[in-house]
Amino acid sequence: MSRALIAVLVVFAAPARAFLGGRAARGSPALLRSTRDSFSAEAAGASAPAGEMTVGEGVISNVWELDCYSRPVTVAGKKLWELVITDANGVFRYVEPIPANKVNSREVKTRIAAVIDEAPVRPKQIKFFRRAMFNMLNIALTDVATGVAVKPSRTTHALYTWLEEREKYVYPEMRGYKKQLAAAPLLDINTPEKMPDALRGERFAFVTLPASEILPGGDIDGSNIGVGSLCPVPEGLNPDGMLPGILFITSRADNLAMWLAGSDLSFVKVDLKRRELVMEVGLSTRYLTAKLTDEQRIEGQAFEAGKARLKGLHFIGVQTSEEDDDVKGFWLCREMSI
Image (tube, rainbow, N blue to C red; front, top):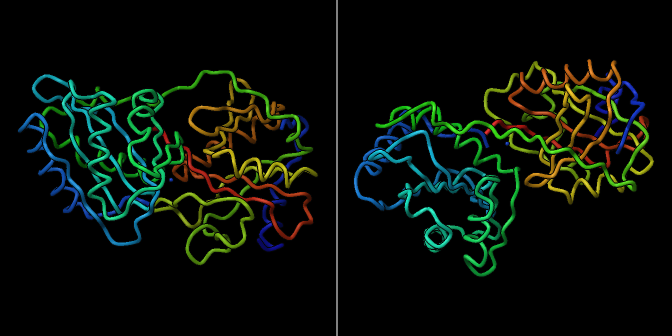
């Protein structure tokens, strides 16, 4: 990352005094309607219909993202359940309705194994984000196929995008749709853990970058983000918007960046009521990163408002000092409400 870009970061920085240290929807509406209509017919027919597999343009990733959960639709008086699978690039997609009395680890494992056998690219890793289904999915995915690792994770961005797409275009047009049955976002009221002592830093700051920097032609790409990573950027992002972020400046930058790289960083959130900066990693782990002063609480409120304007996108950067030419790590993250 260039010095000029770092300068943009630091201009908006305000030193902390209490550091504790998402591919966008693809497919035209016509294609979506075609999928919706055929799926609706299947759901109303046989008790255990075959799933629908589609492959779009692009490279299929060997990392899969999976969900098995009820949908806001009733079929014969019972809630519709679906097994939904996509690859991390959103190119390969599979959906299968499952009868409510077949939603168990054995039945789901059988269905997943069948998809693996038929898929054009075999997965090496399967992620799932649904904590309410952890026990069943963990059992179903364990030893589902040779050489396939299981990873509970909230960094299932292609899956989030597809589920949002289905909630917008597919379910409302299905017979038996009931909006009130839609799953509400899970509110995590668990008290966050403190960051490990060895990773505590000296300062952090709420900062911003032009959103155009993460779009094609921008200065930020995989070559200059250190050990960080970039989540998919959703379609329709305003290039003139300002991307909110948090910059950590610490003499332990290498340690902090490497720890973040291995932690499955999901997103960062400001708890305005508790005046806390919380880092969300893995499936459900929460770390208390900072207690906020009155001034920082105001900055945190602006940070959250900026995320909302850019569909949940934000970033985390780690540097040793303001004068560094490069970051030790830069993470583009997205908080989703699913």
